[in-house]
Image: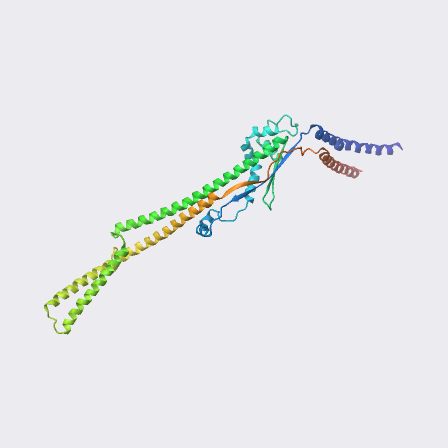
Length: 378
């Protein structure tokens, strides 16, 4: 009769011992740590976003430079979401640690002797450990609707939390300024390249025109053609007059007059001159004015087109330069960093209860697994 009573008591004692070692004692150790050993954690919160200051332009100037500004991505609507994400990635990266001063700067905040050994950053920590530690103490989130970035800085003194948060805001502003300056420089460089390219094309066309004029021996083939055409018209009118005089003499029976030979000679000379002019205008040789006019008109068309392109490029460059210099990315601090008056962490009762609850759940699951395994063996 003694054996049955002993077994239950033995089972109950095992549960109690397991509860003590798995749940109660670790919970008491955690409570003792939070109350007696854990360092106070001060939290500073900052809210910021990125905005663009851009001077409004007139409708006329915008229409002139609209195509070129679209190439530079300066005419589109602006959203600060991308820049807020850039700041977020920067604050969580290794780059911000280096900008603060690297390992010595981080140790100044997180490796002080007054910090408990579980929370303190080891003086011998490598870059990967420092980065992991940093991401635990500097957290960033972005509101997708308002594009407002929220940064929370945890440190072990109120001054350290405030100073570190202030430095991170300053570094974020420097980052945005670098991005803005680089964007402006690249845009102006591209605008200047467009002007230089169009000027080079225009200069090349004008050089081709000069070479053509030197080769053809004519400053303006169009004017030369007009002059030749005018001369041919005058010669044709004079020939008509001379031929009319000859025809009148023939009709009147006075075709043997001494002056008729002279008139006929003048008509032949005029015919020769007209034929020479016609050959010069539309002959079969390559030096005719018609061939020169074809090449010259093509060159003048290219010159006119290049001049318009150059004029537009200059106007677009000036408009782009004015708008680029007028716009500026800047960080807007919605909620500035503040000096914490009291430690936000640790919360001994709440944190200990969370630990107790977690251990109790683990202990309960373990007991159920142990009981099911024991029953399966019976």
